[in-house]
Length: 335
Image (tube, rainbow, N blue to C red):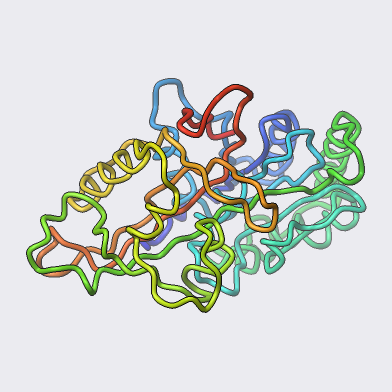
């Protein structure tokens, strides 16, 4: 990954659409600590009309030193896009993440998939001691990508308390407005990572689509048994191919046409459009089928012939299916 710009400390604020007001409050509080140095990008709010939202979000994440996730008991239960944004920032594979902070309401907790990142309750003293003060005077500990030392080495205690109070009050208002039953608090649907390798692909393959014989790489750092359960495959049942997973989905394969088009563009070093079509698969542990949006995350192109590939990584994003819409429905916006 290229080195991040050090002219300003950039913070990506990830939140649910219903928490847009809270996100603005948090961004303003953080920027107030160092107006000339801290710059926040609020996910959703800072998207411009007509842009490729998927590309702009990825670009903003790649340019950020810190990601702050606002985890509240919002009435919308699907947290998949927020967790997707965090997953992109963590770049799947770093066990020691020191650039993600999850803020949650008093009495809450960090969502299970993010248990290894820094979690801070939205209480004034905790916000000051565990987040805001270290951000100001030990910035390199909050984000290991920052190289310019302390942002505000002599930060005034009053400024810290003002920022912490604004954030805590914002969370309190968001929690009150949520009005959800206790059992619905902190409910999330995680994204899935699917890793394919192309070692078994014929030398004569045209590379006009994801090779059907691509091997699914299973393991804790690759494709987990939890993800394989989407396709009705249980752990320890041997090697599986991409063609087997596609067959397990069944139905109309318009989603596959879109994915193959993205694969061709990515292989050619071109930008590809964000996916719009979903497929149905089994939701692990529920006995029900859910819609998933397949997102091409990464292609490992072969050297020196960059027209072929070694591997590819897909992200399967759970999508809430609107009433009356089938499995081939258009994907919702990033929120």
